[in-house]
Image (cartoon, rainbow, N blue to C red):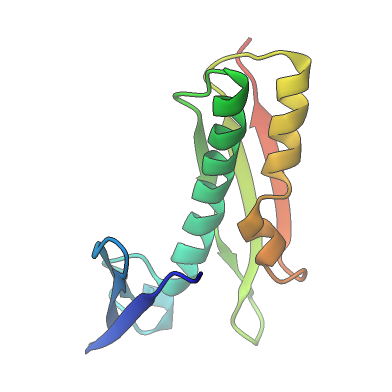
Length: 137
């Protein structure tokens, strides 16, 4: 079963997306370096955001089933566009901060998920991808 997402071009390089099942909406804007105002997430920002939240969500799913506390973990993804044509996402370096320590088994699971969540597996292989995980001391 698929999830329906509808998009409407609002003009001025802006779009409104509507999530079919919930009705929640997201607005986009073209980035300032590509004729937009940069006042909303750009379409490529949403790709980077999808990757970040996919990693957090899949770690959360794994943790819930094992009783590990991952609340408070946070992630930073930096979207870097190519400097030469064609315009595309070139790099997505990620930093993940874990708020709580966990057993070695959990650390290994977090590492695996952070490098292979469903969104990451769906991205073009030409995108450079790296993950640095910071564990509490």
